[in-house]
Image (cartoon, rainbow, N blue to C red; front, side, top):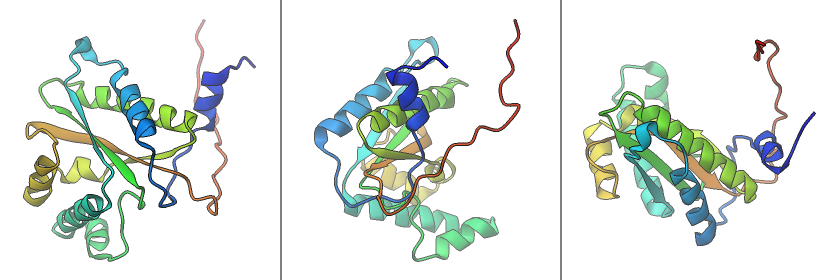
Length: 189
């Protein structure tokens, strides 16, 4: 099978849900954010915004607000998370990138997904773990969450389409082997 460094990096990437407390080097975070900006965007509008939070106190405060929104939810599963003292939506990663976009174009979320994948691949290439975090997508319009997001630089007119947890994978937690589901690919010639 054909391969190269890029393809091997894609195959090596896994979602990391256990991190060490080692902070990311500034140059690594900058490189990962730069990779996000090179993602394709519909009509090349680039209306997205990337808010990187590498401050432990701010991350804890954000998690508490998300839990508060969950506690008010009508969904029993989310309510349980909201009342769980140990729940941490970003798995205690030392950095979180909030990916937001204007809602004026139907493809805004798709643009953000491309940027998120670029961050995943850039992080993997640098030996840094990552994981897609969805909780802000459903809670960003909660008044307390929205006020906090605005205070840390997320544009007020943006919806959060996803977040990227970043950090060094805890070596004590084994990575799962990727298994490709049969019948996933069809080639028509």
